[in-house]
Length: 101
Image 1: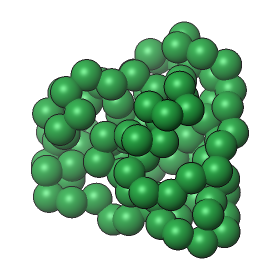
Image 2 (image 1 turned 90 degrees about the horizontal axis):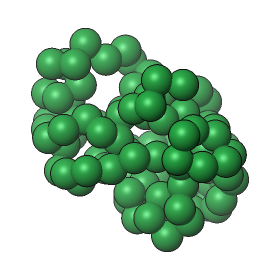
Image 3 (image 1 turned 45 degrees about the horizontal axis):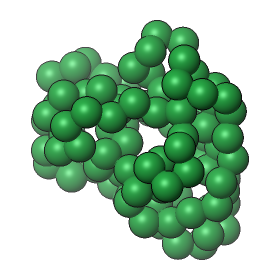
Image 4 (image 1 turned 90 degrees about the vertical axis):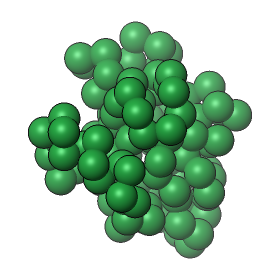
């Protein structure tokens, strides 16, 4: 399973964990420094930037693509509530965009 490295934010210090599956579940269980609100691709509170390892995530679905498009997000930005970590070795580096860091 990939290692997920979260940069520090106003919600907490930097954190590295191993995980796969729904990124929101990983963030919840590990108290990752990423904010959440709606958890359904409706508010963008959990907008993140993938600094490395985007290939270890499933492609965005239609709801995520629509909201990211409305936000003018870059190709490296995703919604943590919608991202799914693939199985297999690797490293994913994430920075929470929501707090302006």
